[in-house]
Length: 252
Image (tube, rainbow, N blue to C red; front, side, top):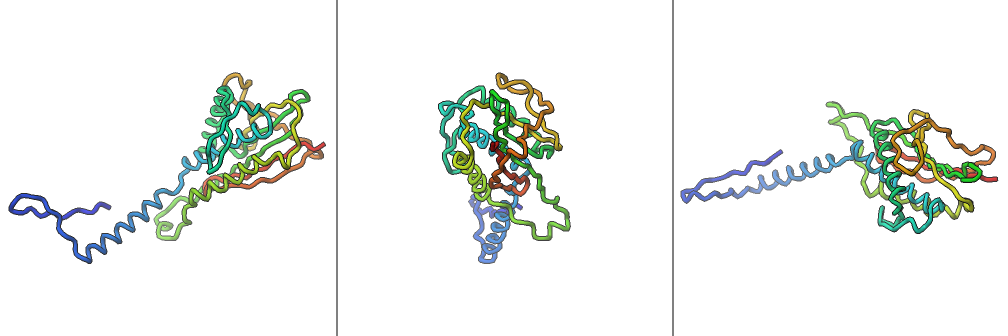
């Protein structure tokens, strides 16, 4: 709501603003507070905003996994500050383009609500055995649409961005410290991205020599149940998307 200013035109034709009374001051203060409250409510997270947060998290999570699990050489990464801490991201342009292209498709699926799980599988080059599966379960928890009746009821307060960032930071820290609870990978490996859309796993077609333009049905690259150990990681929730994280590894 805009507040109209009262203007008096004097004999000297200069515009002057009337001095508000005490009552007007109080009323204006109340209106300003109300507008500020509405402004805060307008900053509640949207589906698109939540999708940006989740996609951004996947980018840094994938980079952290590739670095700390020695899938790519340490020299291929450089330090950046994110989530209030130092994280490592690839400076290999080919890998960077590949990850960005994969996540562009994941972002579309997040917006449409059609993706239920993202998996980073680490596979031994020689034996082709899956050594680790980093699993991120994705749940769309959209709040009900506001109606005329619900507008008069108290709605849940928006989740502070600082709280979401803190939850994400906790997961990244667990990935960084994964060498303390996962077996060492002492053989050459590569990684594969699996996306579950309506419970069907798909993976980018082709290899990483060029960005993927097509996703195809894929084997889930599961680890045999009797040889699999699991570590449940922390989760984060934007109030629109909830991400639960877990890593399973081969234990001979």
